Image (tube, rainbow, N blue to C red; front, side, top):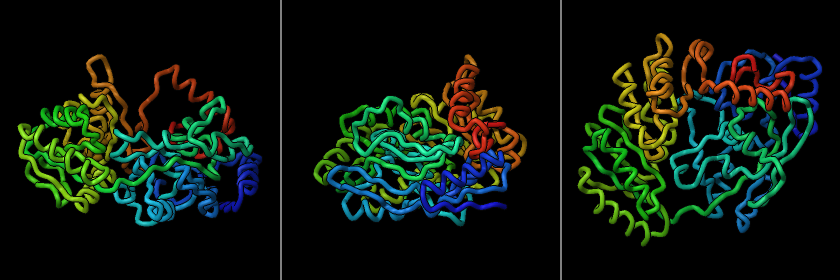
Length: 405
């Protein structure tokens, strides 16, 4: 196996240039925590980005941070915590879900995969906080886009394009993100004894209220759950954050307004932090080792109905995040890992709409079924043209998103 370990953007350009000249595809690796995402790669050659690390510029007063793409999130969090700030998109840690006992999360990795946690419903996705970058394309050309200011006009919004491209268009060397103040305190309102059909109504009511809910999830009966939650009942969890007096008022208002939906309860700050970390990390499904795990985005009002329909067709364990707009489903893997049932439930004239991604599955399953939602013809053609523009020889993470890409 050939392993390139660049220490600068010039060396990164040379490494990709060598692969391009030899027409030998490479895998881009930094912390290695997300190597199990997407389709299995078919190349023995690696560009190791781990030395493109370190915070390059951080201006707390400007709410902007620039760092090497391979900077571990632990280092980012330490710097932000010291200034009372955070990555507001709440990047999840899926190492437990993917069985990655080694490797670390990196800033470039979460941006490249556009991974966002429960706070997405309030603060937006990772791509919404991605301001700029420097990178090397599959043409072995170094380029930059965006900038180090929140308002930036540069023509094409390349950061939005690169976020979620899984390293198939370019290799990040440096990224710039927007950061936000960390809330003074947090609390969680629980409504227990809620059936699936009532869960979405409660979450919608909470999200439509003036109480600025920053997390809304539902764990149905039978789904494994954190120790802070009752195990035998369906539970809606709602998070509020901010100054202590405001949190106290909004928590009590939610308890009062939603009390008729079930048995109300609440969690303090420590239990709240643990609960939402577990929800973002998909901990309720991580221990179901014999199951494929799917991530389904759908209209929030249809999340519970979609999950229930899937569970009637196959043996499935599930829960909801993002107010019902994100459905996590664990399905017994033999066969197609539930792919046909899930895609039938979201597609077609009677489907619920949305798109499904296979997040965890055996290499055989990930090679056999489309890992990402199949694109309609015009969109697939556009994606191919974008790929040709940045990586015409298909040397960067080949096949990770689409077979033959």
